[in-house]
Image (cartoon, rainbow, N blue to C red; front, side, top):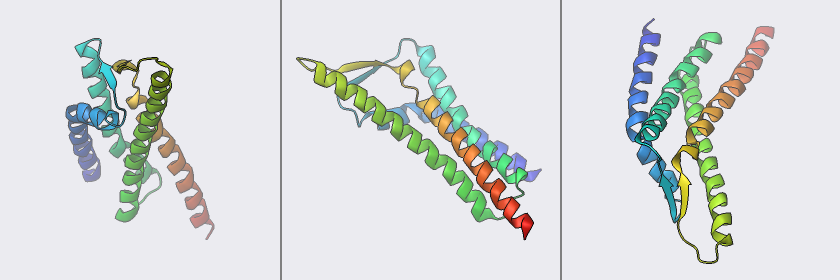
Length: 156
């Protein structure tokens, strides 16, 4: 019960961190693409993007708790590794999205006779979708890895 309460508090804390820092996260990754101008059509779209990013960060402890309970993980080191794997997969997904955007930008930039800033609609950045897919793939992989390890331990 205490672990679930702690996970709930951490999830809430991560939600607020993600909600408040989405624009910093976005500017960090988009600084790697020079001359790319991001445009939001509405303020509501910007708020929704920040809200979804906060929700994605708050899912990490919940998915970790599901794995801990399902496979009865007691070692703190393994618990920390699981959380770190979720964070690393989120970062890899964000880097992959940045590289895809950079390729799109380079292709458009090279096609222009007189290069000018490339305007990209912020609603189509899809960082949240990539991060969510990274977390789900990590969850599925960890589930099958831990399931296999559990079967091997049961055979011994």
